[in-house]
Length: 229
Image (tube, rainbow, N blue to C red; front, side):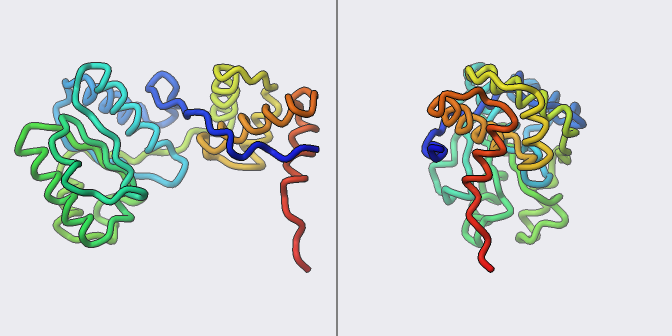
């Protein structure tokens, strides 16, 4: 059996059309309005656990804003420290604010102030609500200035259905049984599952076999390192 092609990285979908709304309709509609320039509040904070879909919503908002002609940008604070280049966007989305160091927190505090004073929009996201973030008190106050939405996870059946839809949109023919099994036995993060399906599809093509549940189990079992006694 050939190893999975771990370097296979197709772009993840990040539009509102490809977002599994679940319990997040209010946030979904508010962010669409924000991207359309018609939101009543220009400062929005999203919070929720890993894999809930916060990053997808941030990227979808930026993508829609750019389609509408706005100067918008997604900034992942977990991988790129905030600097002066973050200023000046009509809509700025800053992800993973809970991981900011002291300097990054000061920069974000200034960014929120600058965006509001200029009548521009800022969208931020982290794992905890503002009051529970282990950040500077003045920053947590700013994060709670505008709209705050908890982003909850959809149920497993909806995730499996969307995973199958994403797979087919990327040219991967997969049975819903495989998608349900992956959601319940492997991961609940749709981004990670989408990438995994890409890899499994590539492995199935290389092996000349259909992408069935037995093939998936066999392939993932061979990828799991043996336990050390």
